[in-house]
Length: 420
Image (tube, rainbow, N blue to C red):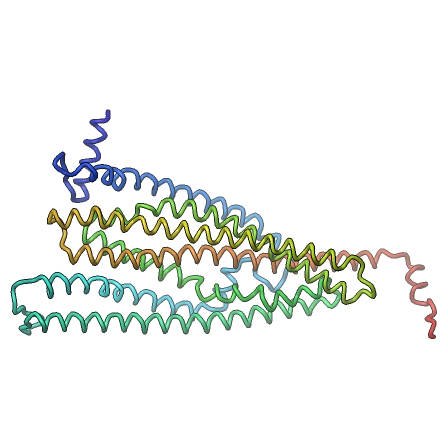
């Protein structure tokens, strides 16, 4: 059975272009088993796990959304629908710029390889390029100028996207603040009036920033990731597969840790609101009893929550950095052996290493988008829940007043007022 497994691994490696045998170094074999067998199985398991979680999340969201929508008018229960409703045209322009960035990115990855292989290590000169005969120095200068043009276009494209995203975020933030303020003003007898201040000032800020990235960031960073992976697989399929080694661990473990951060963020939001309510009560009361003890207890609880959030965030960051740094180890060892074997060129290995450096950045941005999306949904849900609870409390108070006996109401109205 073990022999059949080894034969299958050899066949799979040959299928992606690497037919190795017993003459290969001993340390190559575990790398091949890891890249060809273990990582694809883990990646399939991770995709199935995320798909199952996504289906469960959609099902729970469909069950919860109608209750919120029926109790709060003016605020869409879905943050994504609220963003897309007011920014469809701007989102379309930013998406177009994101799509244009992909071919420019591929050119910036390909040109360093061409510079090393064709301008520095090539031996036959002059060469013909677009009908012009170029010597080694002229070809090097032409490729470097093309690389300069490519990175300039890439920078201008990113600048335009960031400016448009900033404008979109600020417009949506202003619209959301006006909507929340208008919704709050419609209930003159609303309770917890002091809590509207942190909602308008602080809690809506991340939601406004998320509005500019709701479609652009996953499209741009996902496209960047796909472009870099395509470039790696074109250089060498085995090195391209090696780039996915730690990806299953990242997409399973890191979101699990992020869920704990989201739970603590929700507790922090509620603790800040509770603290604002207590301070407001102290301002209206003539003599606040045990105010110092209560405030100290709230400050201590808030400090504990924030410390736990910081520890988890820094652990996630350190773990992600460590996992990202493991892949270059495979490139240097396995890719270096391929260069010595003559399988790939030195320029291709340098290009793959440079591409993997860019590969980690969009992956981090996608994880950041997941964190930002979860945090924004939590904040938006808390705002909608706030108005839902406020409306219920107001309706309950009015119903209690309407159920008072008529005589008691008349007595309260006709009760004389003593003026000192």
